[in-house]
Amino acid sequence: MEAARRLPVDLTVASEQPSTFELARPDALLTLDFHDLDRAVQEARVFDTRFRLDAALGVDDDTVVIATAINRALGRPRNTIESAQAARDKLLQRSLLGSSRVPVPRFGLQMIGKDLETAAQRASFPCVLKPLRLSASRGVIRADTPAEFVAAVARLEAILKSTCDPEDHHALEYLVEDFVPGYEVAVEGLLVAGHLHELAVFDKPDPLNGPFFEETIYVTPSRHPQAEQADLVQCVEAAVHAIGLHEGPIHAELRYNQRGPWLIELAARPIGGRCSAVLRFGDGTISLEEIVLRHAVGMPLPSLERERNAAAVMMIPVPGAGVLEDFTGVDDAKRVPGVEDVVITAHRGETLVPWPEGSRYPGFIFARGEAPELAERAVREAHRRLHFNIRPAS
Amino acid sequence: MGMASDIRITAEPVDAQRCKFLVDRPVSQGVRRFADRGEAAGSPLAEALFALPGVRELIVSGNLITVVKESPEAWQVAGKAVGAAIRQALSADAPPIADRPPATGAARVSDDELYERVNDLFEQQVNPMVARHGGRVELIDVQESIVMLRMSGGCQGCGMASVTLRQGIEGMLNQYLPEVKGIVDITDHMSGTNPYFASAKK
Image (cartoon, rainbow over all chains, first blue to last red; front, side, top):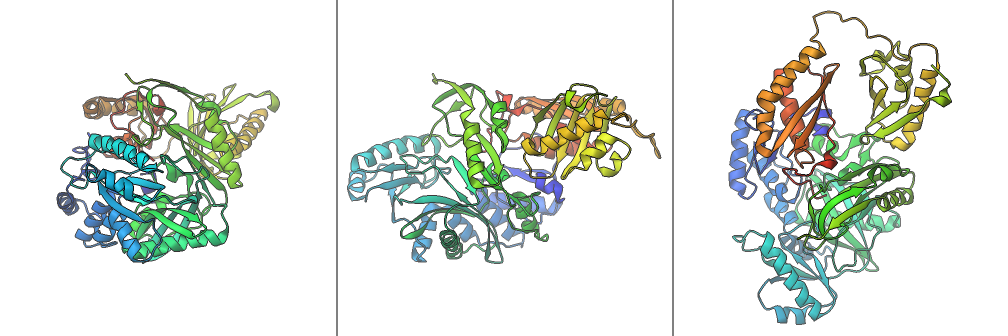
């Protein structure tokens, strides 16, 4: 919204639950049924007849496909619906990438309640179980033995049965894929007429070896060798072409080991809205959202060169399971040199749920510095100054 | 007004762009907002702050100076230069902030009148709407045609609070009270205990 105000672009925010202001501000707020693609497109068409839409943008995995379908329905095609779906669907994505020889972990599809013992015996260890329908590493569990596999499936079953739509016949499906050792990075990019512009490569300095895969720190620029970074970006480029993406933002998660880069996830959206605050471009005043918005509505693009400073964001780890009674140290954390902001998004009284059952970070820490080491050190020190008081949930 | 080294200033960053500087002595009488370097002319404190790289806007109210910047520099760094400029301006003999220039042209709606109108809009239209999600919006003040408000209940800490603020409340103010120049949310969203929508995951 801030980027739209700055450009300026008239913005309509669509959500699946109605805003209380929708009747008063019908041009600015719109309710769409995110679970029914055809209906959402029809609702957008009706809206377009009253208030012209120039482009639709999805901001998360769930809305990217809808935004793509709306753009096509309005005669402003950017990507095919199939490519957007492939960016959303882990199984379809891996199948397309694998058949295009993009390096992805070896994978197989399983369903809760079917052939568990056989699957556990056949799996190659270590492996990672990934539910098809969940995001943000929720329900993702590593297993090193058949016994761990069986235990992981039991845990996953409980998660899926408590969260998924019972009418979704893919809801209980999960991938079993080889665990890929090596370091992990995230690549942020913008596709313009099929050409990938690298916007940032983020290091993830905390090892993500499981058994669960809660993220912590992203730092940019990457400190990995330039040649390896080039390999990683090339791998992303091959992946976007393999699934047919042509325009718009992409966010990719990759691993790198002695065999080179491995594509772990590719999404046709920018990095999450909170974390994106860490990215600035040109003279340091241009946000990622401004770039994405400019591209969507066909405005000239500014410099896609990231600012000179290094930057880091920490997704604050869930400090434990239970009810957040209180937190302290925010002001002290903000005083750490280099720290720009500390935001606690969990509220007092909220039940905090660690991974793999949970998927929500209690807050975020942002820092900048002349070097990535300094930015990383700043977020770690700020985190050390935060204290969360949690009581067990009754 | 005193030796520069005697002046105590406390910086309270609001976010990466805004920081409040609380000075231990009055800086101005009433409220002055400076939207650009031109408006700062004649007010030594405002001139000094606009001379710093990236400063975009100032609001001076009593002993509180709110600085809005565009530069990416952290407040830990930028704040030192702001503090030095404040100390220097307050150490000089000239008043740091000039009196407000007389209004010219068409009659301007006073802040008091605007307060009444905004308050009516909030009570008659805005609050009945946000009440459906257990929220409330309180008008705190109108200064220089800028509306300061605080959200509570379901709005405080809500994942959609910024949508409510920008797409809802600000849009209604633009529609019904075009005299309003801006809107500042002073809510401590981190202290919300019952937000209607959870915040974004990442």
